Length: 300
Image (tube, rainbow, N blue to C red; front, side, top):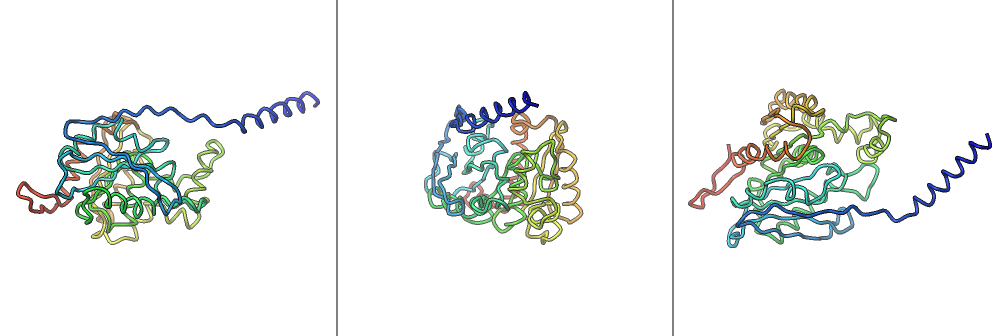
């Protein structure tokens, strides 16, 4: 017994000193993949919803002066940052075609207003603060027909929820490997840290806040005619494939315009980067884009 108490005391003292150490900030190597004719801007602005400064990155064509550009908001995944889309994908090619690409910092938020952290209103930050700041600084279209949103993993979840919560904001919503089922995941001791994070963001299992954040429930209570076109992909080697298939079937049931593709690969940027041509082809079809004569061409 004495030995056990001694070991526990040593561990407690060690934990005390470790917990008081200043955390080591991860080293982020920033290497945006630019292409000719595209410029990058990094912006820091104050978010009223979050009561703090937030950052985002923008890709835009060099010859953007004098015209308003369609805007695509690109949401990163869990554990990522506003650098991810620019560093790990070839998305700059689409800025070169005449699009304004906005990549915000989303932290570990699922881009929703947290149930247990009232200061973390990330949905309001994206929909209100970020949009207003982008439209005040850059030549951005301000109409629904010129605005799209896309994301990977956690960002894919955010895309779907934002599209269903704010259908008047976006004409197109693209979700790659969306963590679509997160609000339905039950508390488990095996993944204690993750479960606690989900509780802080979505509320306890079975709570009203969980149900209000569940895309599977949201689609049942929305007018299909108002929903942005939803584009879904998921890798065949992903654990998220089954819930994405289930969600696509639900969109079909409620007659919500969409398409779903199961594709080769796993949950990584190699797979997501390979999906960009299909994603942006669909995006072009459903945004209202000007033709070569400057006239607006309506999407399908």
